[in-house]
Length: 581
Image 1: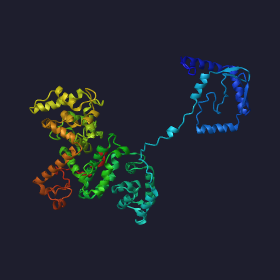
Image 2: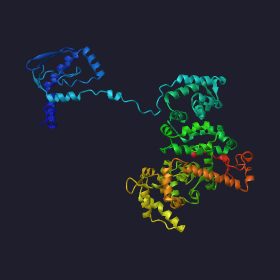
Image 3: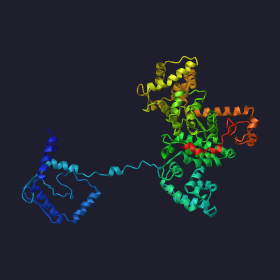
Image 4: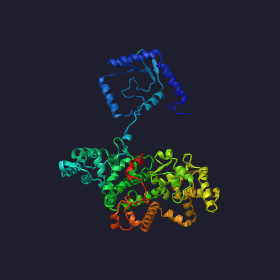
C-alpha cells in the first residue's frame, strides 16, 4: 500500500482537475481579486483559518518586499522540515496549521490536498548555484594565463631597447634585438615587425610596437597563440599557407646555413614552397588548410623555429627546414616535369620510380581527393606543392598523414571504410603487372586473408582508418595494392625483420629521412661523375658557379643544380604564390 503522502499518477490527475475547476469558479476569482486589491493598497489581509478561527495579519508593505528581494538574492531554499509554510514572497496567503480547511472573506470553505501542498513545496525550491561556482575554468583557447607575468616589466625592457635606435624607431635589421627583449625566438622578428605595421612604413616606432605587444600579451598567453596572432590575417584565428611567406623569406635571407642561396634568388620560392607544404603536412592534422592554435601546440614546429637560432646547419632540422630534403624533392619533380612548366600530368607521374605505382592509383590522385589545387581535377595537372605531399607520403607510409593520404585514395565511395570491392579493384592491376613480369600472382581471396590477418579490423570485412593506424603495418598493406616494386620487396623480406621494425619504430630515422639521405648521396655522386661537371658551373641556372668550385669542389654540397640544365624556362616568370591557390 503506498504511503499516504505520495500521490499516485491517477490521483494527481484528479487533484489537478479539481484545482482547475476551483480556480475557474467565479466565486474563487472574486476572492482572489479582493485579496489582490488589498495587497496592492498595502492593507492587512484578514484570514479565518479552521474551526478555531485563528486570525493572522499579513502586511505586504514596502519593507516586506525589500526583505523578499534580499532572500531571493541569497537564493536560500525553503526548509523542508515545515512543509505547510511558504516563503514570504508568496502572492497568495498560505496556512501554517495542520487543518486542511481555509475560509475566504465570503465564508466559502476552500479545500486543498495535503499531498498536493507538499509536492508543490518541493517543486518550488530554488536551485543552488554553489556547485557550478566551484568548477574551475578548464578551457583556455588562447593558452593558460600566467599568474606571475609582469607585463610592465617586459614593456620597460622593450622601451629601453628602442631608446638605442635613432628616433626610437626600429628597422628590420634591429628587430632581432627587439625579439629577444620580447623573450621570443630570434626568427620571430619579421612577424613582430609586420604585426606592428613595419612592412608598410619600413620601420616601427616604440609607441606603436608597445601598444601592439601589450595587446598581444593580454590576449595571448602561450607561444602558439602569439605566433598565430602575429602571422594571421586581421580577424583570423588560424594560419593559411601564404601567411608563412614573409617569415620564411626572412629565414632564407638571414640564416647562415642558407647563405649560399643569396646567389640563387630564383630558388627562394621553391624552397619556401617546400617548407610550407611540409609544415602543413605535419601540423595541419585536420586537412582544412588552416592551422589553428591547438594544432600548433600539438606539433613541434615552434620548437624547430627556436632551434634555427642555435643550429647553423639547417639540414639537421630534418622535419621542416632541411635544404637537402628540398634538393631531393625538387630534383625528383624536375625529372618528371619533362616540359619544365612546373606542372606534371598523369603520364609524367606514372614515370615515378619506373612506373611502380598503379595507374588506378594515379587516377585517384588526380581526382582531387588528396590535392588542394582545384586545377588538378579540372586541368589534369599536378603542381609542385601537391607533389611534395605525394612524394613524402609515397616514401614513408608509416606516418598518420601518409596513412590518411592513401586511405582517402583507396576509399572510392568516400564512406570511410575500405570494402572488399575496393581492395579487389586495386589488386587487379597488381596481378596484371605480376603476370607481365612472369610472376604468378596470389589469388585475391588468399591475399585478402593475409591483409585481414595483418590489419585485424574491428568489424569483420570492413577496414577503417583507425584499423590501419592501430596495426602499425599500414605500409605493407598499401604497397600490396598499388606499388609493385615495394610489394615484391616486402614479399622477399624476412618476416622476423618486419616484427623487429615494428618493435623499434620511432627509435631510429624515419623512412622518409632514410630515403632523402640516400637519394641526396646518389644525386651528388651523379654530379661528381658527370662528364660535363667542368662546364655546368658556367650554366646560368647554376646558383653558385665558381663559389662552389672553389670552396666545395665535388663533395656533398648545399647547392641546387637543375638535373636538365639546357631548357628555355624563364624562372622569373614563375610566381610561387600560384602554389597556394
